[in-house]
Amino acid sequence: MATIGENSDYWTSYDWSRRGDEWSEEWGGSANLFWGALYPRLARFLPSGALLEIAPGHGRMTEFLARLCSRLVLVELSPNCLAACRDRFAELTHLQYLTTDGKSLPGVADGTIDFAFSFDSLVHCNPDAVNGYVRELGRVLAPDGAAFLHHSNLGALVDPRSGELAFPNEHWRDTAVSAESVARAATEAGLVAVVQELVAWCGPHLIDSFTLLVRESGRFAGTPRVVDNLAFMQEAEDIRRSMALWNPDGLHLGPAR
Image (cartoon, rainbow, N blue to C red):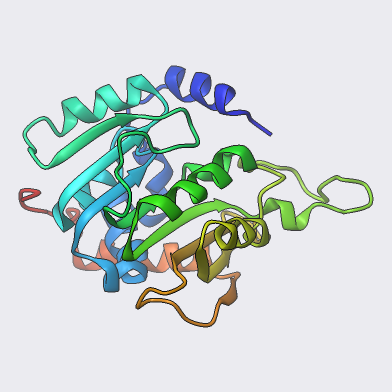
């Protein structure tokens, strides 16, 4: 699948005229996606003190995360994306912007992050990138810190004999990353994948995983759970319909702080 360099080239040259909101249409918009689908999964960790977002793109989710923390660190591989976030959130004084090599968190001090988040970005990344970030999260998370990572699970669906998929890889997921591989990387980093929700993203196959990482000795640790969610896109449709009924003009949100 795509290397770190290939991801950098692709997303640097991508047409960001819609700032990534084109990928939120199934939910009826990015606000619906965040508050309707993501926030309920993250509510026990938010608001947060120091929050880290890996690969924010042009700030599609950053807009909402910025309202829910006292400090927000954005880490990006693409300089163009980081510059776009600087412009978009120029009035916010609690944001920090860092460039990464695609697998590490330079400039983030040990044990300082209360909550880390990455959505709809690491799905395109190979094990070098994903495992690198997991190792770094083992370094930067606070004792009771947690991390929510959205990554590929396509590696679990590759035929071990042929090395091929039985269906097209339409959403450009990495074929070597799986929920199991990320859980192993977490263990090596002193973390535990306490929840892994395998989701059928825009189709019938469980091609993605939402993984919650915590410290083995932290207060959120527990028995790891892996669950299948074949109805994820039905959830998106339900959110879109509900929001269209109750908020026909779209969610109107106040200042970030």
